[in-house]
Image 1 (cartoon, rainbow, N blue to C red):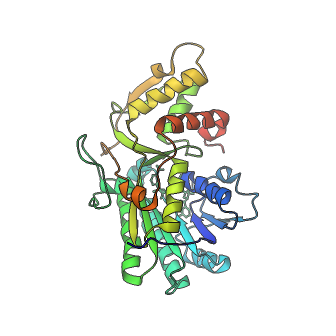
Image 2 (image 1 turned 180 degrees about the vertical axis):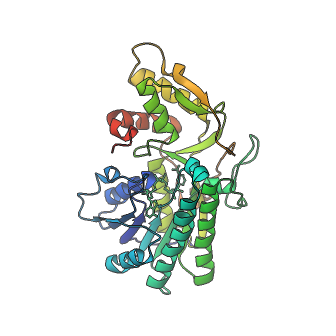
Image 3 (image 1 turned 135 degrees about the horizontal axis):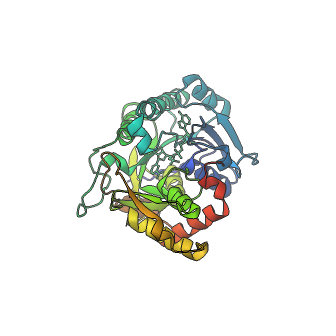
Length: 342
Ligand code: NAD
């Protein structure tokens, strides 16, 4: 087994105005003084310049508003910026929206990824000192029962939603560009992230926002669906490790060893808010309210991340309890992000 050795110099981060991308842009600028970061983002409803407020004043960072499925824009970024590394986050990522409007998911996640791969192939003929890293999700593997073993790198794909099917399609394209053209790619499939800059309509910001407003806190069904949760900065360190040292052509699964039922997460956040920002009367948990479940809602996702742990020495720094405390504290200090007004 030969581990990679890559030193990124000029990194194109697609989707860097979104939740994880913005955290990753900050992470790169904070940890590598020699790096130059170019954020390419179409600023859909999911992206916000407010997420880049720390990165924007930095001379080593450049923001370009543009669509990854616009081949001319993407080709120009590669040539103007001498891109040697792509970290590809840009995607339509909200499962519920993929159920009501799947077309955008095919366009961005499948066609957009194809356009980026083509641009990389044409800009980097036969180069080995470059990397195309694709950020993907554990949702491509489908749903587990309570007793199934966690997903690992050999689990067959079995996507159940238009979102996960479009991400699966993009994973296959990225892998095929390595196999067919020798493009130096890596892929990570990660579990649910949480932390600063997450979009207001996602589960954890919704719990916090509803609680603070004294409104019903919506919980799908009985709240028994299980996800593995990873603090977003730990996802950033995993991606960075794979980009710099991962084996090209390889996929790594990334998880937090923190399986939780949705209802237990909501209760834990309520208990934290009782302590950090008490209600005048009653406990926040009184506001928890079941709502109609999502169509085809996958029951459980879980990750076996032993490959990245043993090969690259990666492990998360936060437990769920420390990460969620930081997250709740961050939203209390940055309430605009809960309203989507950032
Ligand atoms: P997000 O929805 O918060 O951000 C997506 C960003 O991509 C936004 O800034 C949006 O404006 C941009 N974008 C969308 N379409 C675009 C296009 N056509 N061209 C350019 N930019 C475009 O998503 P996120 O939660 O930060 O997820 C980022 C990536 O990580 C996605 O690929 C997602 O599948 C993957 N992922 C997310 C999670 C999670 O828990 N959030 C877990 C595992 C993997």
